[in-house]
Amino acid sequence: MSLPVTEVERELLHTRRVRYEGYKRSDGLWDIEAHLTDIKNHDFELKTGVRRAGQPVHSMWLRITVDRDFNIVDVAASSDAVPYPGGCETIAPAYRQLIGLNLAQEFRKKSKELLGGVRGCTHLTEMLAGFPTAAIQSFAGEKTEEESDGSRPFQLGHCHALETSGETVRKWYPKWYRGKAA
Image 1 (tube, rainbow, N blue to C red):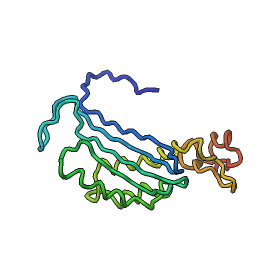
Image 2 (tube, helix red, strand yellow):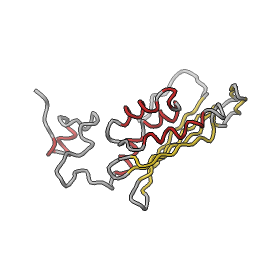
Image 3 (cartoon, rainbow, N blue to C red):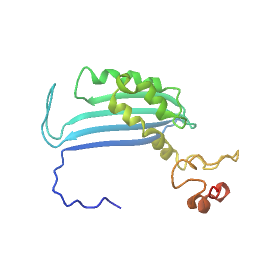
Image 4 (tube, helix red, strand yellow):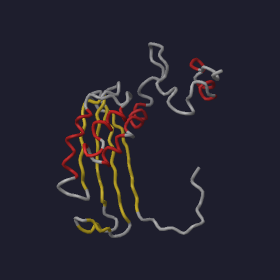
């Protein structure tokens, strides 16, 4: 279902794209990569010069390598296009501070504490928020939903549709259905 058509005439000025891709590696680890681009459809005046229409103002990459339990074992960051050459791209090594964190355990909070504000790059740090769900989607079909130890499937209780007192869980995960709270 798309958005409703607007009745007001408008002009596209800016396009931001963020793409996440998940790779299963031959060594048993996983690479989750993100790429962010910001592109204007008109020439754009920056302090550092004019960026021509269609040329990226930002083109930035992040790769997070995780094990099967979502523990971060490696991180790489790079920038192909930045508005302030010689400044923006120098922060890339700071993202290695993420090594040792777990994508499924307060990752968004901890990554913001480590790399928020002037401790990181706004754009790279914003991309971090999508890594947990990108990893989960990459692992889909590779990890069993219900572990052999009988623990609850990790996705239950983490979104509206999968609330354990809801109809979706009652229908598809009856073992974990808890009914409506009194």
